[in-house]
Image 1 (cartoon, one colour):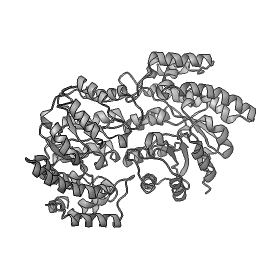
Image 2 (spheres, one colour; image 1 turned 90 degrees about the horizontal axis):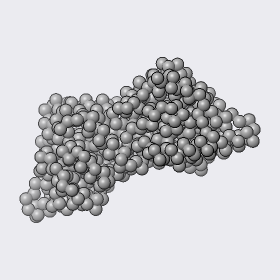
Image 3 (cartoon, one colour; image 1 turned 90 degrees about the vertical axis):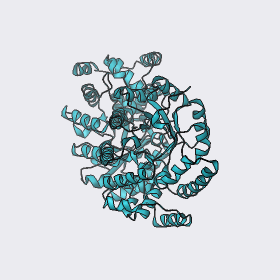
Image 4 (cartoon, chains in turn yellow, blue; image 1 turned 60 degrees about the vertical axis):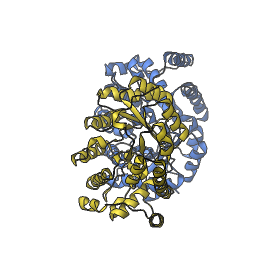
Length: 315
Length: 315
């Protein structure tokens, strides 16, 4: 079935699932977060705030609410924002999604409720449907979030088809974090127009010709410009060069626990140790791990440009 | 290692993971909930509010907060209460656990954070430790909640040992919902004094002689008095009779989706259809399913006594 390609997702884009800095007592460090968001936008990335790599589910409802406000108040155009708003609890999902919609965000990226396992498509349809109807706005754009390795609750093609049929102007896309190319490919072929974001930039070479909407990718936190260049490449040769550059960095980071690794890299280039903090149940990298990772990146001539602005803003 | 058996859990008890009624628009129906809580206490059960069978993770933070207050305001002795207070987000877990502690509850039953998988014992220790230290009260009693089939995050014996060692007066027990008797037995033998609640009353025959603290069991919502009688049996013969009675009901209910089934049974005996509602992603039973279940229970001469009081209070 042909879905409606929403203009907000007409041109392939890269979104960073923005990592979240914490203060010493593990509160959200809003000034550092906002500064980093501005840096990412300056580097050509959209902001998938409150994603898996943002430790979103380790943040409280009111924390997420306030932080989105902080980012917008700081002058970031809401058209760049794709906040995660799914939650196990329907009222929380409604509150977060409504807030994203009213703030004028490009869309809301919605996890399914992920505590119960083996739930039916009927139950998941009811969940998404209840959120959409509670908000009742033609400005709402929902993107589904398929990440079964964490949720244990897959978004099936049957569910997608039911949601697109019922809400063609609202349910406009999906992030497929399964890493299962067969699934991404099948969705791209089955639902032309639907904004499909594959698991990482590694799949763009195959996904873009089939109409992928870009990517929402962990390493967009540290190499947004390179991924944007990959997306904007006008020749196959140019694309291949960027793919190679981007891949070597991705492979180095992927070999480590992803979130602590991203935070260590940002801490290093921002010269700001506080970025290394994570909330339990995650744990920071040990110095041996992080030292080895940074050496590896140095050997690749990797750097994050213009990070000095972060220190200024966050000071 | 010998753990401290807290007086609150000295005598084996049955706790019901109280099912949660909803209004037509899926808000929490506090009056019905409170009436049912009073009925359960009258039947000899403690109240494990906000458990898996309570759809706790489908309830918002403020909803859980307010509902605990409602129960206590209605005159239920907090010594009967063992609310679930775990959450993926540390600040939410702290807020809920502090509230339970300040309200004088018997304990707080804490899920691990359950979004991320493959997390380390170090990370889980930090999570529980941060909650305990943030509250900083010698009135706090934490029971761990091991339900890996839903969380994907097991509570290992190494973690238990670390927590008991660090917080011997605070980390006082565990609910083992894995259904893996080998695990329950190992904990009972390894940690004498630790208040171990096996997955269901079906395991009490084996668990009580090893020092189990009782059970927190789904069907305690519908047969609290029978399970209490099982716990209080003074002879093996008496216990065997109650075990048989309780098991036939459990087997009938277990064959169905548990939460919708429990709600249908309560709806039937309270003569109050509104009890059948569930929040997405759960779905209600269809009439054929629920009809068959009720017939099966009728054939067992099953009934819930004194449920008329519910209708009165909730009217």
